[in-house]
Length: 161
Image (tube, rainbow, N blue to C red):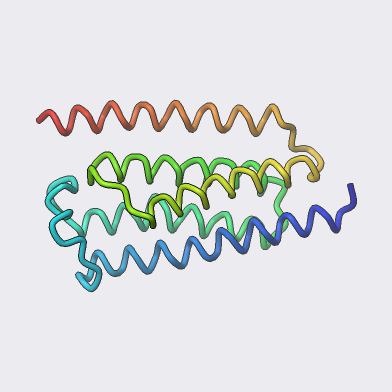
């Protein structure tokens, strides 16, 4: 595979991550400032706080997406693995979010798809980027799933109290 094909995949990873970072930052700012309202769903958030939800969105989605964008722009060899990790984390974020809100919206379904696209882009780039093996990428996905499973246990404990 040529370097130019890897560059095309890297550009796609960076573009998707950049758009996600901007969208997540906008959502985070909207929740923190109150310009974006979850209405009756706010009571279902931890501590009933849209502000904490906004901070979490910024830290757990916008920041990793922005870091991935920078990695892609710098043509880092870690871009493929980071795309798999960040995409998996976004899927996990949406799953945890839907568990807290106890509702599913088309926007959430869309972001699960986007997260899966990021995972696929990461694997596609990894196949074209020297030094990144499918085994390394698969290991990152497995560890992310384990972390998300632990987060679900913590969420259940918080909900019980």
